[in-house]
Structures are given as C-alpha cells and as structure tokens.
Length: 441
Ligand code: LLP
Image (cartoon, rainbow, N blue to C red; front, top):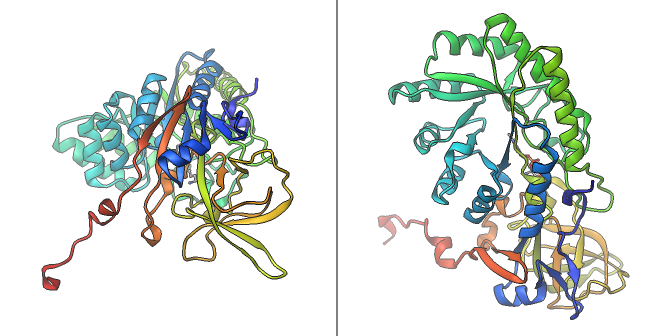
C-alpha cells in the first residue's frame, strides 16, 4: 500500500477554483497574504496520515514503540500532535527536552540521544523524567554515572552502537558506517558493558541503539541492522548473562523530493523490520524485545511546503535567468549544504506551461545561496508566490539568522483553517540576546 512519503505533494494538495494551489483546504495565496512570506505551511492531515500508516504497518508486532525524531521539526504544536497520535519523542538537545516538557508532553515517552551531551543537558534530562538515555561514548558513561550517583538515582540507558552498515545516501547524513562520530564501535562494547557491570552501578543497561542514516530508500539495510544488533544481544547474553530487552533502530526512511526519488513505503519497511526481528528472535531464542523506531523526515517532510514571494530577476546575457525570492539559505539550508533538490510550483499559476528554465536564488549575500538550479517553470512574474514542496523536515529546524534575516513563520492547515504554530521572528527578538558592554555606553 502506498504511503504519503512516496508522494511529493501533501495529501490534501489540489488546484482550487481560483486556479491557485490549496493545501489543507487553504488557498496558498491567501495564506501568503495573511501571514506574509517566507512561510512554512504544514498539512496536519498528511502528518496524521503518516503516523497512522506507521501504527498500522507495525500492528502485527505488539512490542513496538514509535518516537518522532524531533530534530526534523520541533515546536510545541508538533509535540501535541505526536502525543495525540501516541508517538514518543526522540530528543537530542537540552532545547528539545525543554520544548517537549514545556508543551506538556509525557516525558516518560522520550529518549535523549546525541554524541556530546553536556553535564547540564544530562541533568535536565534526568530532572525532566526522560525515560531513557542513549549513551554514545565512554566519556558520557562516566559523566552520566556521576550525575546519577550524586542524585542517588538509577538511569535507564541504551548503548548507541555503530553497526558498520553503509547506505546509499549523502555522506553527511550517513551515520551507521564504521568511521562515524556516533556511538561505540562493536569492538568497544564489551569494555562498556564491563564498566557498567562493575563500576557504573547507577546505570541500568536495558538495550542497544543504532541509526544507520537518513533519506534511505533500501529495505535491506534495516534487515542487516536488526541482524547486527541481535548478534550482539545474543553474544552479550551468552557472555555476561545480561538480557537486553530494548532495541532502538533509529529512523531514516526516505521521502520523495523530486520525480526521480523512489522511496519505499512505510509498510515495506515495517515488514522488513518485523520479519528480521522475528527470524532472529526465533533463531537465537530471544524473547520478542521492545522495538523502538524514531523516524523524523518521513513524518513531517511531505507535510510541509515553503512559500516565497518572487522579487527581482536577472537574465545574464547568454547565460542563466535568476529569479530571486524573499528567503533562502537562512530558512532552508539544505540546497546549499547537501545540493538538495526540490519540486517547485508557482502557487498562483500551477497549471501554466513550464517553458522557461530558471534558477531560484535566495536573498542572501552569498553566491551559493541558490534554492533550485535550472528548473522548468512557467514564466514567473514579480509578486508570484513560489511554492517549494517537501520542506517539512530539516528546513525550519536548520534555519538561521544569517544576514540577520528574520526566521519565518509556520502555520498548520487543516479543513480550511490555518493556525499559526511559530510566529515570525521580530527585529526586537533578533536583538534580544545582544549585549553592549558598559565601556561603549
Ligand atoms: N535517530 C537518530 C539517532 C538520528 O540521528 C536521526 C537523524 C533520526 C533518528 C531521524 O532520521 P530521519 O528519519 O529523519 O532520517 N539534516 C539532514 C538530516 C540529518 C539527520 C540526522 N539524524 C538533512 O537535512 O537531510
């Protein structure tokens, strides 16, 4: 069965009677006028369709817990949706823990991971009631044990491992290969376990965690990941008589940015994981462990679009045509960082003939600030609303104030209603943290 991550468009996208694109029953031109641009628009129905697909696809395996990898898009409203959908949260910073907690999220459904968690962040995680901490390295094992000991607590932990699996995705977003900054190498696992057993008695090791990469289109890597983890679980049981009952497989399922992307469905990935877990559990005589998955991109990526307003344009004599928009690498760093490609439409002219080759340039003082290179679109007029699809993941969450450009607003649309979920930043907020030392006054 097809799932929403296999389409470029949010599930409610259509062209309305005004000839404009509509998402969640809201006319994009009206949204651009009401909230101004650049604007992130999130389709609630698409997010919920994806979370429902995940739940449905894994329903034959009762011991499953889904967590949303908040790094893909973290706001209090998203926490609310995840809570309603029965998802937990995979958090990777003090800021994400704070956001989840202040949204009222049930912290007993959260995990904290990351390769260099600070003393303060680990403390915050423990105080906030984060359920499990995925420990990444020896330094953190010692630090966390000290923190737990001084507050007389026992902390549930997973060990993050590097499973040695390479997947075909951009080098920057591969994480499971051996030469990675994340996790324990498999050859270091025994030393970690012995430390926990003999010295770090305030840590309660409950399982293993791995994440093989992001924007993954292959099923086989998940089968292999389960294989590597189960082999370790069996080895640890046989050698130390320790039963590890939790396995966290990370996230990674890909989405469709352009026609050439062919992501697999949520059902296919679920089938592969369940098949591999059941096969290995039987083979090694391991009781069905509690499986965690923590997808980010596939949950929010397809639901989000970014709207820009077309401004100046430039035809280079005998060269490219550049069309500038009012945003760029500060609201979406992915094109300049990963050469990421997107599908683009003119929201007020979606059906026009795409007969002009154009390069959509951002507004930043940097030649590399190009949002889409050499794409075919109908001729763009000044003031047109340009819609970039599939920007819902790692767009707003990687936004910056480069050039002191304000961070955009985000709205959630559903059934013809739009609700602001992130206010546009103001100039006052922009300068809020600036301090002029007394000597200048
Ligand atoms: N779990 C862990 C431990 C992770 O590091 C990540 C993503 C996820 C889960 C979620 O993976 P997802 O389902 O979203 O693929 N900024 C990059 C993506 C970086 C992903 C980092 N880790 C991009 O824009 O493509």
